[in-house]
Image (tube, rainbow, N blue to C red; front, top):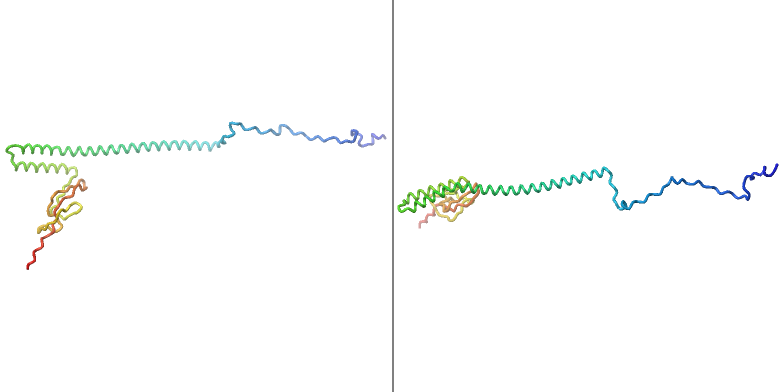
Length: 211
C-alpha cells in the first residue's frame, strides 16, 4: 500500500495552510436605503385624518352660517328700531292733528264772537253767553282727548291734585276742605298736568272769649 493511499490528508493542498471560510453574501434586495424627505414637505404640518378634516370643514361652514345669521339679526334690530321711532313720530303727529281738528271749530266761533263784540251796538249779555258757549265747546273738544278739569270746591283737600295757597276760616265748609278754587287743575289720561290752586278751610273761626 502506498503512502498516498493511506494518508488521510492526501487530498489537501501542500503546505498545510487552512483555506479561508467564505461567509454568505447578503441579498441586495432585502434592504433598501430610506428615501430622503422632499424639500416641499419638510416643514409642512401632517395631513389630518379624513374624518377629522370633514369635521373641521363642517365646523367652518357652521361658523360661517352663524356669522351670517348674526349680521342679519343686527340688521333686523336696526330696522326695527328705526321703524319704531318712525311709527312713534307718526302717532305723535297724528294725535296732534286730531286735537287741532277738534279745536278749529272753537277758533272759528271765538272769531265770530270777537267780530260781534266790535259792533257799535253789541249786547254785553249776548256776548257773555256766546263766550260761555265757546268755553264749553273748547272743554268738550279737549275732553275727547282725555283732558279732565279739576274743580274740587267743597271736597277734601288732596295734596296729590291740589295746591293750597292759603287757609281761611269758614262756618259752612269743614276744616281741611276746599273753600274756593283760584285756578282749575287738569289731568290728561289720568296723569296730572297741573294741580288746582285752592283755598283751604280752617273750620269755624274761634269765638271771642267773654270777659
